[in-house]
Image (cartoon, rainbow, N blue to C red; front, side):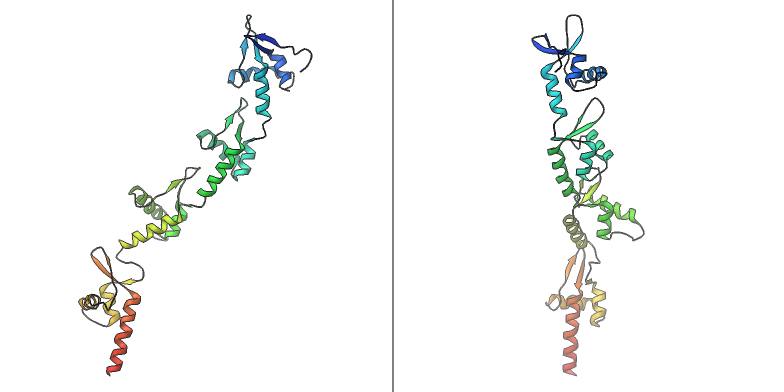
Length: 255
């Protein structure tokens, strides 16, 4: 503190006028208006004397200097580097409350390192999820040349409660791979054409029988596996082929 920065007691508190407060904060002597803007913005608590002149408590100035010198906080650019995103993304998150930050009177954002580290950990977990387009490709839904149909299938399933998803920090819907696997299994149970199975007619063709009821007859006697899908029975290909080999072997033995 310079010799001319003699505190004045106001409301029982040692205070400095705006010019002396500027020097106390280490600002240029021409930055008196900057201190006034800090008071207007609420970043500094100012007091007025009997003549209406503005002063700032010394303790308030010391707290402001300590916050400015706090190495536990980072700016938007450094936060962006730590989070591996663009600086504009960090500012957007701060404005939407996704990432807790403080805005100074100059319009600059600052963030606690602990908050940034916690957000980085959360982002890492979120990035393990697949975006809607990635999930659609993973599930191979719809027609190959219709990606919009892929997305609609997943979005409709989420609306119906058949598939769970979450929203990441950027507001994008994401899906966990385990949840997609579960969805595909449930979807297959409701699909007449379950992969790796045959219809009664297809099984009859493989076995060389003309009546589809014969296929059901084999299944009822435990010679053939089958799975119920809605109103239909499906027959695993491996089970049908195994029965065909046994029947062919028996036929050769008799002949």
